[in-house]
Image (cartoon, rainbow, N blue to C red; front, side):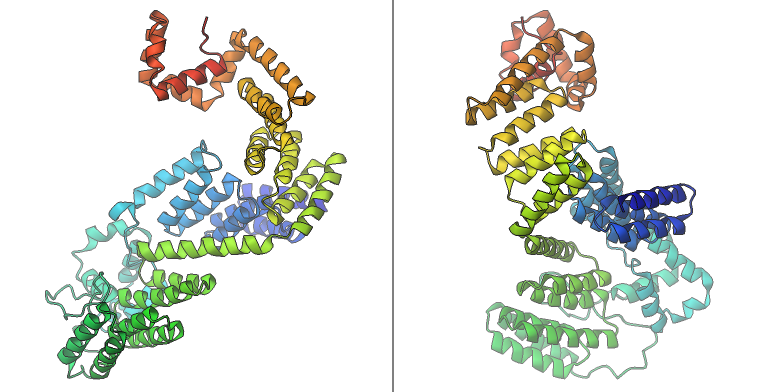
Length: 548
């Protein structure tokens, strides 16, 4: 079965290289049908979907990669790339930053963050709101509005909308086009030819835009006659709300709605009262009604977005994160705001955590561990690794499992991953001696002998008579001494260490090293600076500096 998967994956890779994208996706999908827990297959299919410009599918596969192997940086790279293509740069940057937690030197992730920062030019590094982001919904609204419907007779108008959807930075260069001014009036709910406002203020601190005014009145009901009186009632309701006199606030908002049934703001304020009273079902019911009123009377995107967000908040209070995420996404489709985006991401994390906790089962974890041990003893290390991965997902607090997986990584020559698992193991159980010994072994394989000695000494603190730790210490001290007297080995190790490269490129450190070389007594003075002391210790560890 594993051979079939590998064969299909290799054929998919070959098809992708020849730009036969549909064939590649089909082959990867067949392989996934055989092995649905192979993260590499989802990663490859994500790349294929991105080439086919199916970015939503590429994002779904990237998220599956992260779910299956959260410590693999390429999953975050795939996710960030898909989100960039979808113009969701804030989320893309977060994905790249999450990946750097697992591989801080990954240039692809760092480059992704730089690319995202070029687009995050809004307040506090946020993504500027693009009113042209949801093109299909935007066209539907513009075709229905009498102010902009006639523009669709000219093909250049649709072309302009497409360009602004793909490159929102072109907006400033096209503002002289009267069609664009009227389009923005409809989209953001503000008549750009009018200097006044309708006096409508929401209870919240942010100001909701007034309802759009069109040059040609829509064939709807006549404007309500008691608009001013309704606004006065709303003001009384807001005052009562601030005093937490919720019954009075509801009465005023109801009266305002009767006087002007076309203004959805009265309903969203009423929903806010129900939210404060913890009557969440009533809150949602009123919000849905507000959205219907807003759609019918062409309310601005911001008001519709607020109603959807309030529904999301109500579900979030009930810890129904799936429903909350659904309505936060609807809110973001109307208008992207940093607050709602943060709540949507919070829901995603809560859902992932709930899924992780629901998956925990120590009994099934033990079964997977036994299978992994059998595969390990038979020399089938990739199969053993899969079992240990599953065992850890089923019981992530068991230190032994990380030690076993570290041993597996050692056999596969993945020493950095082995070291990471050893660190996790000894963090969960500092007295688990195998964790310290395997950490020493990983560091020894990486030729970091001084750090390996520290790991073996930690093991000896737990058991002073442990022969494996004693032999490891002796072996590392001998190798470290030999390496320090082998200039070629010192140079090779230094060149492969990014931290050493950083220190040697630092102009301040160059001056300090030159001074120490001329006057060794200056070393004591420089060691008083903690940062300089750490850098010098690193150079001593790799053998570039020596003290005689």
